[in-house]
Length: 105
Image 1 (tube, one colour):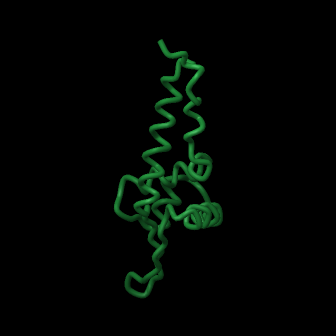
Image 2 (cartoon, rainbow, N blue to C red):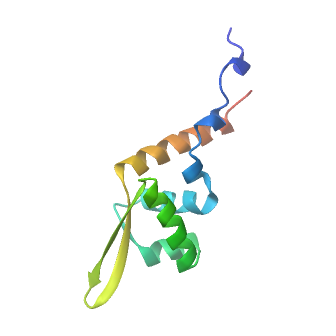
């Protein structure tokens, strides 16, 4: 029988970029859609424009979120979307959380 202490704790599989609560909330919101408007994500995550902007910049630098700017009529809009790498990282992070929740070691 294998000693559970011989295996690495599942927390080592957590993604430090995604793990922060606000960034986790942003990524979870974006995982449910192809793309979302900045204002929708801001309201869903319940943060200010500046907080969302800073966190999105971190996620964008990690390659997890794509930012697209455009117009609806004459009004500027910003859309956010998870990249394929972001979707993969989010799935792996969620798997690590599930493993931690079920970890007996």
